[in-house]
Image (tube, rainbow, N blue to C red; front, side, top):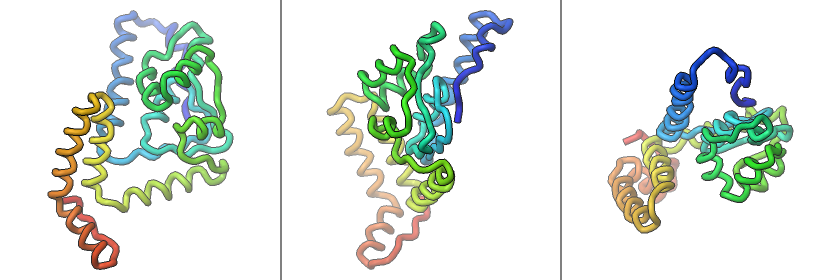
Length: 199
């Protein structure tokens, strides 16, 4: 998948200010993933380390092969995973995240599934088709409702509990005013498959 940044790049002829500004692209990439408005289904068929681990965790759903590995090896070269720390914390919780940050250990696919940041573990031969099938499945639902729901999911990450509840109350009202909501309920009552139009 991705083994992180090229460490040789740290020795390149660039000032620290230039490197700092270039790292901003990583921030923008993470934010773009969060604000994409469409489901991101990740397919991990190898190593997802350092920044690659962060990219994997940007995905809404993760399918990985039995041979996949995950980790934050930065400490082993005198770094700390600053650029991915926030997304790792969101997905793993503080204790598991700190375990990886402080040890630089790699974890296997079975452990990733047990820790809850991978949804499915399949054979290497099946990983791509499994991810594509899952993407087709979630793409069959209303794109508008998926967009609104996904945005609400991520928006509540940084909200106080009561503020989040009030926000979600408003989002449910917005969703219930859509044509796709009406179509979904009508199709359910008529015992047929819905035809969502993204309105």
